[in-house]
Length: 187
Image (tube, rainbow, N blue to C red; front, side):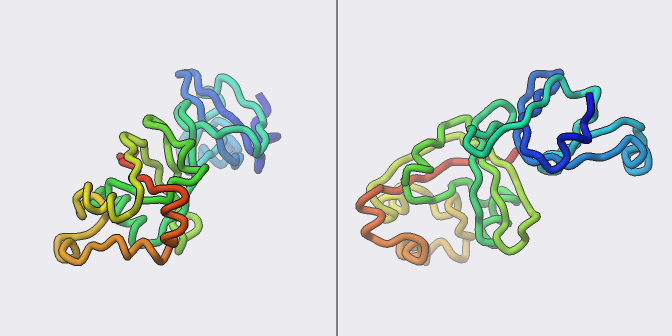
């Protein structure tokens, strides 16, 4: 299999174990892999995961219009402010709050979200969606969920307010779409 032809392309990669990954590929030659990883075999990198040629069952180019998969589940992409990114990464924030717009309505339990740190474009983490709760407003969401799960530390819990979300979403947007609390677990 000529892996070099997939360098820089968006692909769907199926491993011999049946796991499916989508993303933009970077090619690593056998010589590079031997030097860096001690294994002389061509490889492809997708989202910081390295797949050696012998691990790949099938690879095909995909278009931007196709749904993205990660471990065979639907893959969604979102950006986070740095502070929220760090809290998700260290496990102290377990609920992501968003407007329940068309994009968020497509998210299902079991899907995977790829979060990108807004302040460091290359920094990413993946989380699994373990629950999803829809509310009329952030006021209802804040009344139903503990501040710690929303990313507020012990010292911030008493000042946790749904008004904090007004810097992202207007009250009109909340009325039109509702809001969602996406329960997540770091992969």
